[in-house]
Image 1 (spheres, rainbow, N blue to C red):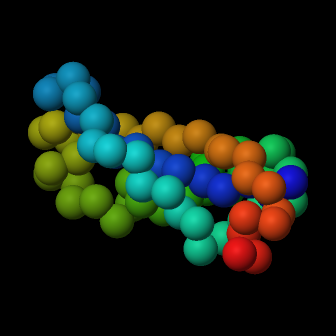
Image 2: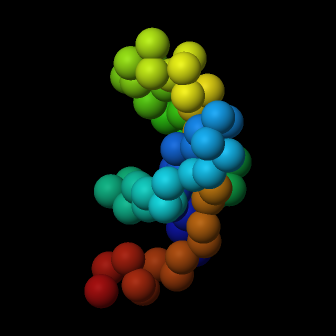
Length: 75
């Protein structure tokens, strides 16, 4: 089994989130490496967002890792 990361951008002001964005360009060998990548990617995405918008809309990022069978990756 492998894992892939999905990220979700949310607004604390609107009280809603966008649809999850699956990041299927990279697969992780285990749960821990996927969770570490989720934290690291979250920080990078936050840095890319416009500071004024980020603060105004109180953006935050959620993420989760999903397990997938290796055969489905290679198909």
